[in-house]
Length: 437
Image (cartoon, rainbow, N blue to C red; front, side, top):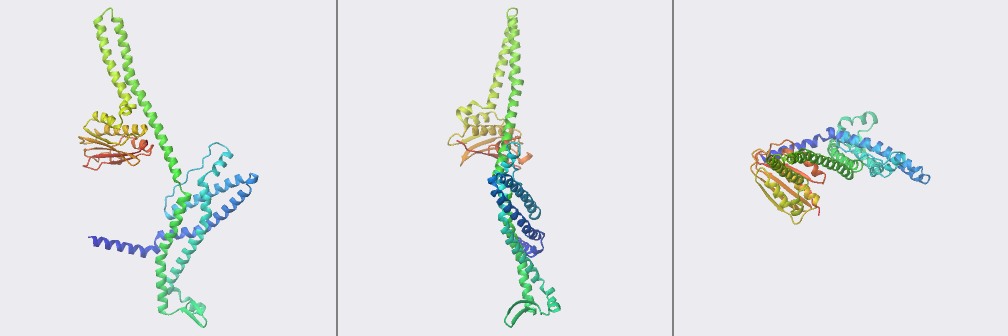
């Protein structure tokens, strides 16, 4: 069977090599290189002229808007190049981050353009792409035209004796000796050489296009810094939304829980005070009920404080805090924490609430009878794994039951959440957090 698979793979590769000269991808890549030459000539000329003029006029301050205009123009060139790469090479190049001015007005926009690293990368691309476009388009055009002309030479060599009074294509002349491609062996050799060049040219073109792809994605695409800024902005939004949701939850729990009980307690104590002289037994009964309400209100306040930040976490660390959470879980939970030291309080708090939410969700897993929590340090990462012995494969997104918004909260601090809930193997959620001392 392995031999058959290897034979099929070899046949597929051989077919790809033979069909490469007529494949749509090859023609698109060749068109990309040929169109790139005139475009790069325009880019190069306008960029060099604009930067030179702007730099020369900086002494009169006219150079500032000239340079800003050149930068904006080169960003327009980048849009054309990204469209070419997406359309002809089918490479999904992301647009760079837009240039944003801190203030309104023309001076602020000009300053933002001049300080934009992305805009200067577009200028650099306009300059360095020209010599590469000349080289790559010439190589591709020469190989392509020579290969096909020699491959098809048996079909058109009759043009020479019919119209030029030569027996065939003249290859070279040395004194009185001239060599023509006119004999059957010479024609067959030319056809074979053309076939070899035609089969090789698509892969040469593909290599040349790879350089263009690297230039476009590296200079005209979205940079890592732009991605990082977007991630931080998204993470900041998640943190703000999470904080707002927590505040609403705390307000709701206080209003519906402890506040309502304290209001009822105040009324009961007022009635007890009025009946103290007339009916001591009724007053005592009201005081007893008020005492029970006080205990319930205190327990609700403790639960609320534990939900904000438990005192045991601050005093004794993750091991004791997670053991306390596990003791309140609906199923037995084994907790093992192996940390050489305590991480930063913020990371420790995120780890605590991550495990709390995951354990709260364990009860919803089908067939879960026990669970386990493992926490350890790996390099500069704090690793958390929560697993259960349920049936698994029952949750929708990510193939695991994960509380909504938990992954986004971890992303906000460069954390990672991985869920494994294969059918019949239970559910295992692994979280990674950055280790910060």
